[in-house]
Image 1 (cartoon, rainbow, N blue to C red):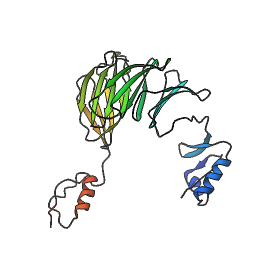
Image 2: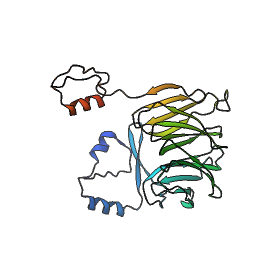
Image 3: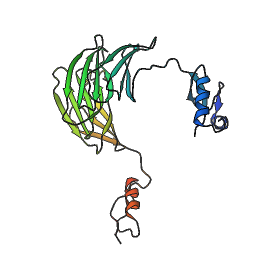
Image 4: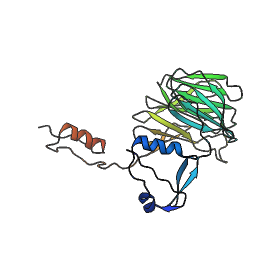
Length: 271
């Protein structure tokens, strides 16, 4: 079942809902989409919705695209995919500049160095690769014993990288040596993204900077880069957060599992 709305004029949320076309089959919808000469995006500005034309569509990957990143000059875009490749694109004309081969499993994240001349990529093959953006050559491969890697990010000082893994571990890497400097644990499930706070004027080398990590455990954690201490854990309150079900009677095992997934704590009495 699909819905489609097309309107070139600003509209309110109520008007947007009312502007939905009648229900169409997938075949009818695909035909209508093919007939459109210019595809459009719906963007929200305050409570107004307007459509903006898609400037360019970049095609070439043969699988899901997991991540993208712009180079520092804004003209180069890197993308990575389930197809085990990294692609470099010129966003001005949409051309693919290079296809980077080297990973042997899905490439999950890409991140440019602050200078833009080196690209880091993380993969489910347990490695991070550093690529020369100009030549496409692999400069270094960092091998992780922490399992499959889902994320990678450059420190703004350009000297270290952070990675997040399948086994809930964050690692800090020395770019020049490839050595793992530190590893932190605190999440209970895989880590999908890591990010560094910007370098401040008071700390140009990034000393005392913060690393953020997001996880499948539904939390974001903030870490002190120097000490590795978890500074704060961010999470939304679940429906039954901290509700104590100890001693509750008459609940099935499935109901208990659901309640705990929604934040309940304690043990029930089995009948």
